[in-house]
Image (cartoon, rainbow, N blue to C red; front, side, top):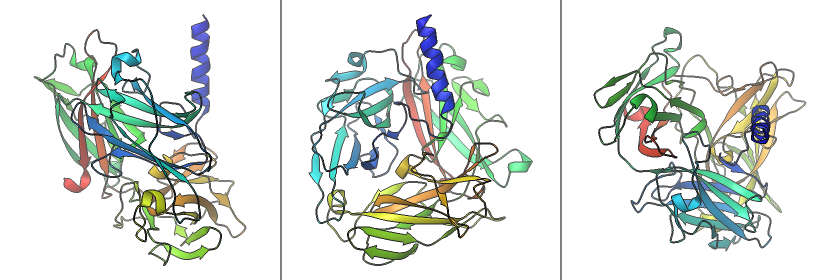
Length: 420
């Protein structure tokens, strides 16, 4: 009875958090002084954090602490299923060596207005090594106490045992043919001992590594030998959306394309050109980096320690009032979170504005509208929606062997509309 009550209470808290999910099983930053969190496959900055099990690959975690205090950070990994519920495994079953470790690799900022400590770690390392494939949540916490979470990141460890082929086409629905991108794909599981393909395998599709866009395919359209075919007209039909907006602060010595003014005093202040609504009848080509960001400083030698921070001022002409709703500014730089830190404020001139403290680099961002009537996030009202938009899609194949207590990640493919 007590366990049932705890479950109901947990579900209540989850359902009441409609704008910003903050569970330990998502990408989250729990302290305002923690900034510029990067997490990627070490072979390429800003890449999707997926590595081959036992393949010698690593992921890199980097972040800044702006508190100026001397702090002790630890980290660990926890195995999860395909929907980020914790697996019924003990740490000894999915980790080699130790179950947690101290984060000892750090450096202090140099010649910057904003002082900070930069931390960095690569995983796997000699102390933390995933033993099995699957989803892992990386937890960083203070003073060895996991209740004092600093940040969490989603890590994907794959043991490739299936192959996937896919193609991206326009929507089968006439009404959305000019706006949507449909993904049809086939999974070949001949390398797996599958008893029931309808229950043992499921496939997740995400657009631009954004968890909020994830579509879980639990049952294939049909089975052809050892191939699972997913091509029903009603599934995996994604809004194409629009290219991301961007700005470039690799240097704070002169204005780049999107910058109106740079002020330097006791801190850096950057005023960006005003942003209009981009929900127009026709698509316009803009080059973007699919929502990512890169920490860069062309006037220094190592952006990890000599890239400075700036107060970035954004303004938006949404042609909407606070009675209609509220816009939010999001991107991978803030994990697409809709919260008080990403919320814009309405001013007397009829524009929306906000300022964010961001490290030098190149950033993609977009605006999400939350209507007062529906309370639902909408990233199309202010940005537009077009089939021609260049997007990346992550395809992840999960497998639970009969009798197993955990779900394996047995396939990963990166799809791109630009390579069709």
